Length: 173
Image (tube, rainbow, N blue to C red; front, side):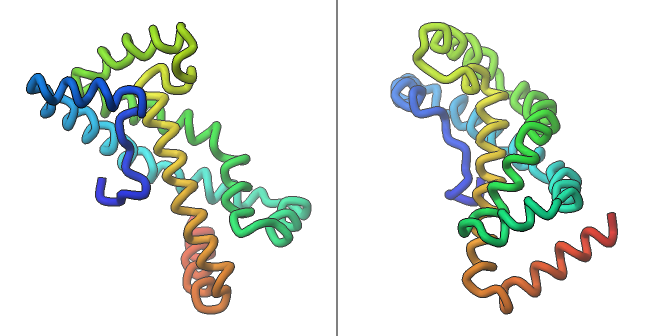
């Protein structure tokens, strides 16, 4: 919730409906849903640590070459390729449990299922749980990419502190 760059909003197609709902005094329920969505992501993201460390430990020569010769976000791309699906599976139960507290999540899922059936939205947004899980992953990889860019711009200054953290975490696992 505290980081505007990764805060999870209502899906775009629900924003117009949200404006109307606020007009009819339903703003508190919408705020509760948005808060629950973001709390779900905040609870799920720490579960990524072991999976990300596992990905680092699995780097092979080809991966390392792609990372070294790649773009400013080659590490992030590596992590996304290796960890997105397993992290989705790890995050989903936490997201499901947390969003269940907001009574609007069931209503969202009903409306979104109809919209997905009509081809109006992507199937990964057809439940609030999938939407939040995907947005949490997007936020995680965004933060990783921002850190990666800093390291690549100043590898000695920024990199050494982060490398100490990373390799310290690897030693402790």
